[in-house]
Image 1 (cartoon, rainbow, N blue to C red):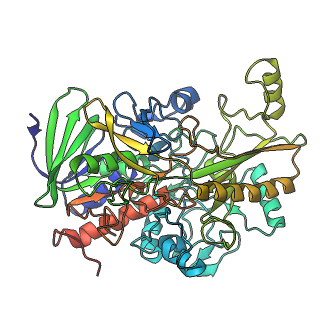
Image 2: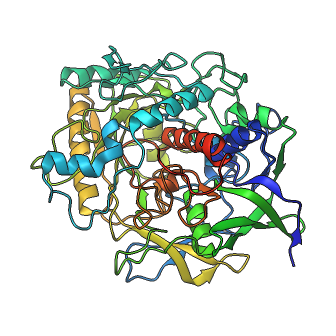
Image 3: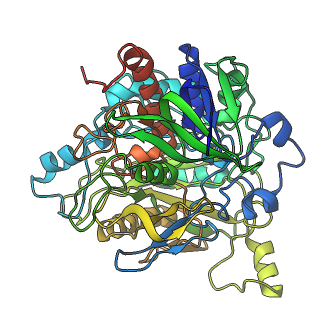
Length: 589
C-alpha cells in the first residue's frame, strides 16, 4: 500500500529541461511544486569539475549519464509482423537519467523550426496539389504557428545564452546568418562560436556553389553571459568534450546550469531524486489525474503524491508509456489507423561523410558543437520538391566538435580495426580529417509507432514500451538527396579521399545516430487526431500537461531541443495565465 503524502499544487515527472522550466515558472506563480526524478541529483559545482569531467571512458563509452536499462528499457522491432526484443543497452539513441536528463549530455545544437514546418500538411497540399501527400504519410499541421511561438523561442535563447548569427531579424535579411530562418525579434544573446578551419573550408566551397553557409547556432556561450534568470554562464573553452558529457565551464546550457540554481533556492519547490514514477492516478469520469505513484529507489517504499496539476516531463518513451499505462487517450492501432497515443513516432534521419586531406593539418582535439558551419538551402520547403519523389529535407554541416582519444580516430574505410596498420593510419589521418553530417527530417508514417509490449516487463512489473520503427522510402530518398548535395560541396573542397556514409536500409539500434526521438503524444487541434491540445494539455485529463518532443506531430530537419524549450514556456504561460484562473479545458481564443 502506497503511503499517501500531502497534496501539492503541481508535480513534475522528470527533471530535465522541461521539468525545470515548468517547475520554475509554476513556483514563480506561487504554486507548491514537487519535482520527481528517477535518477540521481547532478550539481555542476560538485559533479562536473576538472579533472574528473574529462573522462571519455566514463561518460562517452560507459554512458554514466544515460538511462539504466537494467531497471527500465524498451523493446524494438523494425516492422509490426516481427517480435520485438528488449534493448539491453541503448546505442542508436541515449536517453539521459538524473537531474538534467538528456539536456545535460546533449551537443547543444540550438535551432528553431521553419515557419512552413508548423503548417507542413497544408503547405504541401497548397504547393504540390491536394493528393500530393502519400496515404501512409500521417503528417499533421501543428496547432501553433511560428509567430505565436517566436517570443518563447526568444525567451529560451536568453535562458541558454545561445550563440549564433541571426539571418532574419524582424523580417530583414542579415548577412552571414541563415537567410531561410523565420523572423527573429532579437539577435542571438551571444556572437557565434569560432569556426574551425575545416568548417571555414566547407563554407568557402558551399559559397562557391551558390549556397548560403552560416555558423552553427548553439546553446553554448561564446562569452561570459548572465542569463534571463540572473545566472552567470561561463565562456566556451573549446575543450572538445561536449557530447555525452556535462560542461566543465558552465558554458553549455542545461537545466542544471541555467534554471536549477534559482529553482533550488525556491521555498515552494522540492526536488526528490531516485524516485521512479510507476503510474499516474487517473480519475477517468472526472477527466483528471489526481496524482502519481512512485517508488523510492533507495528503500523500495512506494508513495502516492497527490497534485492539482501533473506535468509529464520525461523523455519521449516515458511520456508515451505513462499515458498508455494510465489509459489516458485512445491507443494508436496501426491496423485501423485509429487512436492517437503512440502514433507518429519519428526519429531524425542522419547520414554523413568524412574527407581526408594529406596537405592539411588541424587540431581536432580542440572543438565545440558550435565550431561547425551549416547550409539550410535544402531543408523543409526551402527548395522545390516537384519531381523529386520525396518531401522533407535537412541542414548539411561540417562540424568538428572534438576528437577525443577513444572515439575520435577517423581512418579511411578498409583500414584494419587494430594492429600496426591501424596505428599508422591513425597517426597519418588524425590531424587531417573533416567530418560532415546531414540532419534530415522524418515525416511521420503509419507504420512507425509505440505501444505496450505484450511479453516483456520492467523491474516494477509494468509492460515495457514497444517501439516499431524503420526508415521509409521517403526518408531514404530525402537522405540520399542531401548526401548528393553534400558530396558536391566535399568535391569542391578538393580532398585527397572522401567517403559517404548513407543510412542502411533497415534501422539498427546498435550504432549511435541521435537522441532526436519524437512523437507518441502528439499535439493538435482535434482530439480525435491528437493526444494533447495546442497548450500541451491532455484532451482526456484537463490537469495533465505533456512536455517535450513526444508532442511533435513529426520531426523536421533540425535538432528538437530549441522547439522543446519554447513549447515548455508556451505551455507554462497558458497554465499561469489561463488555467489557474479557471481550471478546465483551455480554449483557443
